[in-house]
Structure formats: C-alpha cells, structure tokens
Amino acid sequence: MKQCWRWFGPDDQIRLGDLHQAGVEGIVTALHHIPPGYVWNREDIRTRRQTLEAAGFAWDVVESLPVSETIKTGGKDFSEDIQHYRTSLTNLAREGITTVCYNFMPILDWTRTVLREPQPHGGTAMRFSLLDFAVFDLFILRRPAATEDYDAALQEAARTRFKTMPDEERATLRQTIIAGLPGANDTWTLEDVKARLDTYRAITPDRLRSNLIDFLGEVATHAGQLGIRLCCHPDDPPFPLLGLPRVMSSTADYARVLDAVDMPSSGATFCTGSLGVAPGFDPVDFITRLGSKIHFAHLRNTQRLPGPDPERPDFFEAAHLDGDTDMVAVIRALLDEEKRRATAGRADSQIPMRPDHGQELLTDRERESAPGYPLIGRMRGLAELRGVIRALA
Image 1: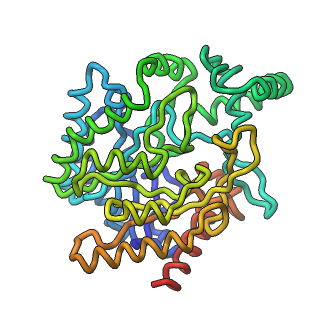
Image 2: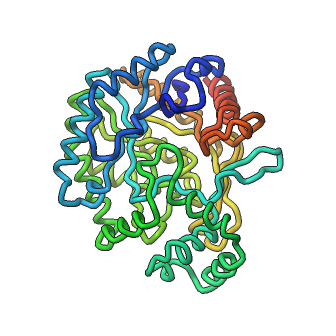
C-alpha cells in the first residue's frame, strides 16, 4: 500500500516538507476553498499539484471532490451541478490525478459530539455520544420530528442534561455538530441546517440511493474515459441522524450501489473507522466481497462504548491498533488483494491508504491542531500501520 497523508492546503499547520521525516509517500488533499457544486478550474488544480511536487510528493488522491446537496436531493439544478462535476473531473485528469474520493452523506458530514475528550494516557480523542446528540437535536436544533427518533428514557435523559449544561457547553456542542470536521463539504449555521432538512422531507433511503446511482450513471462513464477512479466514503457514523437517510453504511449498501454501476471507475473508499462503528461489521468480509473495487483505504480504529441504543452506539477514536477493528487482519486482506491485482496486471495494484483521525498526543495539544488531524497522533498511527505492513509483506 502507498502510505499517504491528508494535507489541507496552504493553511495547514503541518509543513509539507516535514512529512518526509514521517515516512509519508504521497498526499491526499482537496481544493477546500471551492464550494460544492462549483467547477474546480485547471489553474487551481495545477497550482496545488505543483506545490506538492515542489515538496517532493505526488497528489495521489483527491479527498474530496464534494457532491452538492442539489445532486443528493435531485434538485432542480441537478443537471448543471452534474456538468460542473464532470468538468472538474476532466480538469483533474488533465493534471494527471486519477483517484477521487467523495461521499453521499446528507447535510452533515463526519459527526462527533466531543472533539477533545481526555484519555487515560494524557492525550485526547474525538467521541460520539448519542445522548449529547439527542440534546442537540431535541433542545438546540429543536427539530419537530426529533421525538420520533429517541425513546422516552433517552428524551428525559437529554432534557435533564440540557438543563444542567452551561451555556458555554451548549454552544460548544452546537458548533461541534454543525461545523463538522475538517474537510466537510460545508460549514452550516443552525438556520442552514433547518432549511436543508426541509429539502429531505420526501427523500427516503431508496430515493437517496437512487439519486446516488443516478449521479454515478452520469459521471462514472466519463470518469472511466478519463482514467479516473471514483471512490465513495461510507457514512460516518454508519446510522441515521436527524431523521436523514443513510445509504452507504454497510457491506450490503456498497454491494447494492457498486453492482448497480458496475464499472472499474466506480468504487469504494474503505474506511475501517466509519464502517467499524456498526456492531457486527466484518472488514475482512468487505474486502473479500468487494476488494477489487477498493480504490482508497482509510485505516483507523474506533471503540464502541455502552450507550442508550446498541444500534446507534457511542464510540471514540481509538489508537490505530486498538479498538473494535482487527487491523492486522484488515491489512493482511488488503495485501492479498494487492497481490491479486498485481497477478492480474492491474495498473492500480498498489492501494493508496492513509492513517485517519489520530489522537492528540504530546505537542499536538500545544499546536491546537485540526480535530482528528494532529501531527504526532497520525505519525504514531502511520508508524504502527507501517510496522504491520512490513511484518506481513
């Protein structure tokens, strides 16, 4: 696997040149200053590529070329946004970039309720608490249908917690959820979220899945002609929030979509942390069934915690070799997939991967690093993953 690193562009506190010291081989990045639905022009793409190459790296994966809410809902400007997406793919291909990650999560991307929860070792980790999310949904956002999503006991616990929560803590929870994590498609206000929720009133899971398949039907053939591999990131967390549908939360979800658009240009971003939150998820089975369609891997670990709903578990971002996912078994299966590809003569026999969502350790606390993307925590993760790869290769 090619050992990559997510870099957020010129404003990233981590200097590109320093990443050679961490053994980084390639870069995952995006043009985060361009809003969803707009064209990525070739000049901006070239500037970013040249910046990476000047530091001794290639631009291995785009993460992400965001899919607009109009495309997700099948809105009236669907065709225009699709054309913009196709044009962006063309411009990326002309600059030699061939792997593009995206997601199809409605409104909110990667959702957490605590960004820096103290850990026993002295560092911090991100966490999701269903109780805290219920506090946000019921008493901060005040979504009219929220009471349908939580039983009476959880509603009462949320009410009690909200009443005893200081104003500052309420504000932090609100901002943590609506702002999303680094790389999210948009930064919303509370009113934005309410307005966007209205656009999903008639969107069932089947309808959202159909919209995803329609999107791929419009762009995957074009991507294939350009030599680009598209890879969809899973829902994070892999269960519904705010009454919104989720359609990429399990192996079965991926199989349905990738079977419907069965071409080499349509594939998966295999994120062990996102999918691994779901009780019973088997990552090796995912690789066995869909390994040929994995174009990119996020290797991270999550640990489920006791909570009010086992189907929507609380969890925190564990160290890369801890947590609920057997990372050694995952890496063994991915290396076997790479060997199969090499034997078959596939040009993409080496799968790009990156360590994801590290804990904040040591000097990370002083840096005020982006949540989930600290330097030391990810360096530890990459070193651990590299050791497993070296031992198994």
